[in-house]
Image (cartoon, rainbow, N blue to C red):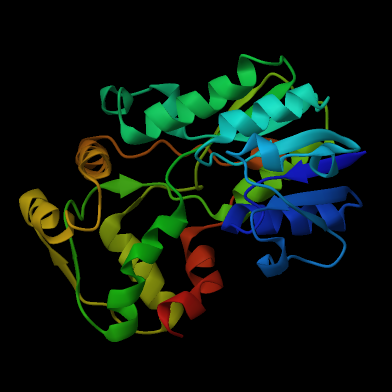
Length: 280
């Protein structure tokens, strides 16, 4: 039977497909622009818009028994169509914010969105696994322009400590849940293997590039005024609350080892893997 992957051209989806193919799975990817997807040989790429039921015809679901659900806008439409077509198992990419572990999570932009994504599946079927990663290391790519151009990074809460997770670890955990029945009905929290301060995060990137990156601490108000034209207010609030809270209470590391049976990749490894993104 075939595994259907949504979000196939994203950082998690691409590595998930590579991992599934390497393990002998039959994989189909759904993309709004299949001709531009540039996915590995061996994957069946079909056209479809997750939010438009009229594009999710038999060619999307024929022979599919399980699906990886990327938390895109409109995914409720996709899940409804998949269940109607007979897809019976789902692995859902969600967020640790949906666990509501901290007051900051309640009503945050991430929590509201990802809780709705989870409900789209759990309210329709009992055959699911939910992955709840914390902050992605890929979020640090927001500094790529400054690093490539040599401009200083200006950021608040430099002493706060998070445990960023490598997207490859998320993808490989997803593959395990799709290839085994062992994780049905489980909600799996996952982070990087170590909480590191924002200062240390910049240093890890600098070490991978073999150069020093200038870092300037600014106030939350300065950060807001410098970024509000690019970042929606709910997301700005969510970020500032998260960084503020992790000053006193660093992220609790929850590596993916119980699922992948391998140590989670370090932030240093992520930075090395993304040297080209920072201009190396």
